[in-house]
Structure formats: C-alpha cells, structure tokens
Length: 208
Image (cartoon, rainbow, N blue to C red; front, side, top):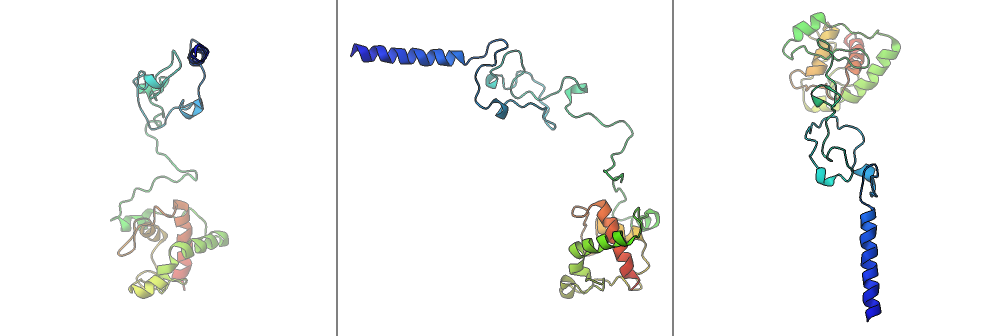
C-alpha cells in the first residue's frame, strides 16, 4: 500500500515539475501548443485596440503587449494602415478614377464620358463575350430586345431604334453603371473596363 502511495506522489511531483518547466521566463517563451494559431504575427488591418493590457491573461510571454493588442506604435495615432496622401484619389490598376457622376445626370455622362478603349476587333470580341454573359438574356443576341427575359417582360428597347441608335458611349456606360427604368445597376457585377468593352460591342448593334 505504501508503495502505491509513494508511486502516486512521484507521478504528481513529475507532472508538477513538467508543468513548471513549460512556463515562460525572460527570453524563454516556454512550451506552447501551435503558437502561430493564437499569436498573430502581422498587425490586424481593420482592428484598433490600443490597450497593451488587453488579453494579458492569454499571453504567456513576458515584456510583450497583451494578446488582444493590435495597434502599430510606429504609425501616427497607432494606426495599422497608413492614410493616403492628402488631396489624392485612388485609381484602380488600370488608372481609372472612381465613377462619381450621379445616377440622375445621364445627360452629363453622355456629353463628357469618352471610351478609353479603342474599337479594335479584339476589344469588340471581348465585349460580345461580356454582353452574352450579362445582357443577352434581356436585350437578345442582336440587341433587338428579344432575349428570353425580354420576351416575357416586353418593352426592352432595340438598340437600332430611333430612340437609342444615336446614344453616345457615355450614355451607354452610365446606364450599365447605374441602371435605367426596369434595368438595374450592373456596377457590382461588371468592372469599369469590362463595361467599356460592352459599350464597344453595343455600338456595333446600334448600327444594324
């Protein structure tokens, strides 16, 4: 009986010593299970917790902020993302500015917008592919308003009609971007460049 009692004490003492040896001291982080899963290496881009004691109870390393601290002390106001340069406007990778013409300014868009893409056969071909993907179901493959949806919901104006055939590129782009009548906006589905490609193809249908 004493032997078993002695053995139990040895096991308990060994476990205690093992747990103590896992503790962090100074430059020794101790033993951690999958530390990269809970010690974030990069700063969190959209988080701003400036309290260095936040999450201290989860941090096993000494002389470091708490687990939930996410601010960057090297940037102004402890921000993680730098502010853009003053008086600058972000462009996309192709150099396009954000589209800011209001929805109700169709006449303005028609008069000031110019297609930045040339009417090459390659651009028109790409525009056709995009047209077939996003527009054909209503407008039809030839732009006569006889797509499968257009046959059910009548009133889709043909591109070669007197009311539409002379509309400039800016008008078409603005309608694709903001919608008009029963047609909704396609800005969230089609990029700026792809919208201009569709415009090039639609202009070929206006001439039919």
